[in-house]
Image (cartoon, rainbow, N blue to C red):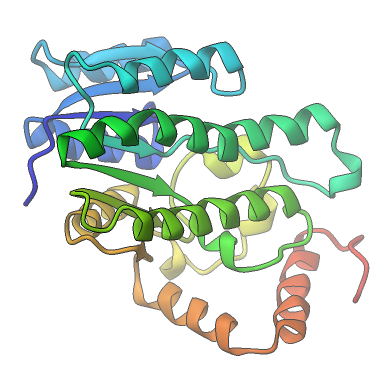
Length: 266
């Protein structure tokens, strides 16, 4: 088991980010917790104990806030040797019915934040010859889902970017992993307005956030490239990769219409 000295985790106030923070704190890693909810972050720091943890309140849709987090990642004092890009933000609904501000906010959190923070962290890691970046993507990266066009496309970017970066950094001592969880029991669906989309999913498809955190950290430390927790999700991804894209689109569109009957038939 790799020991990370100091980790910065975005979206650390709940869900997968909180679960990763708990596991790392238990292992003695000093944490820089990043999210919008200061009170929740301070509760976690108090719960974890010790004096090595930091709270960095930031709304990652804001460029100034992202720059503040990036500067912390690039700092040579108390360097970060593990970056977890976990912050998530989704808006359900058809693309043409969303405002440009809503669409841009998704891109700011899901794409721009991953780019800027990884770019801030990796040079120092390479110069020190050690480090890790864990990018939390989604199985959504692998399918075109009507009603979530920007979210799925953003996750596809994160997955492709991470896989390419893994190849670029081979032999540098810096590990890059993209984790693609499926349905996870977190606040995400409610906040994103996606409860109706997932309410019919069978219980056995739902994953516990702590399991995703455990498996993702283990995969990163094994220098894997892509990790998908749970066999059903690995099989589903293999199936969608093997099927003709036309059939995948029809299958996914049929699933999407269960929650939005107004979606057109293709």
